Length: 306
Image (cartoon, rainbow, N blue to C red; front, side, top):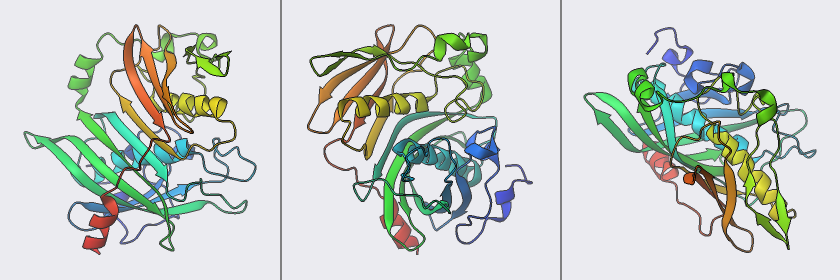
């Protein structure tokens, strides 16, 4: 771990007056960093700070509602931060997120006041820790996001794999970087085909100049692109409903070419299961508003450490 990392002297309680080093969350732009502090809170648990600013590009609702995709990005950033700070995973390691989930606890998204940010205290529990030859190879985490007053706002979690630079190069040796692609080809929006109130398979479009999803150069389609597509899918099918619960599995790297097809494979009263395929291979699956909430272990472990 770099001795100059600002978190070397971690605060005893979440701080919201600064952002963590952007390297901890693998971002180039400070404006896309959501984590404010990371500190240990007993054996196997951590206490972190997250801040959602009112001026973020994804807060477009006039009432200031925080979109679920922003909360899921916080889960991703928290997982990386805990890996770097708590388990000394080097900055040059790559992370593969196999599984991610997020759920608004109150059945609706929290609302930002026009004059302030939304500060959240996050309890993070280590559910599983993979180690090989003394090196962290994987982490599974559960999280509970609360207001500083103690009211629970959301729960979530994720499964991360950690790859050394040589391992990642071996896995991605035939990958095509986004740098070699024409912007026009990937700036198209989602292409919808509607027939008798049923959404037909469609191609997933994306804007490589979107600073939230494409913060830095990548050799694969970022997972947030599938979250964004799933949210748009949900809004098309249920225009009067709110997406409050999202569960994703990433089964393969998604390349920038050929196109990625999104298909609804199952739907309910207010739920959708969407698969994303490329060359007839499923690269990701998303369940929107799944039946039954996942139970987080973070709250219980946090209370035991208090």
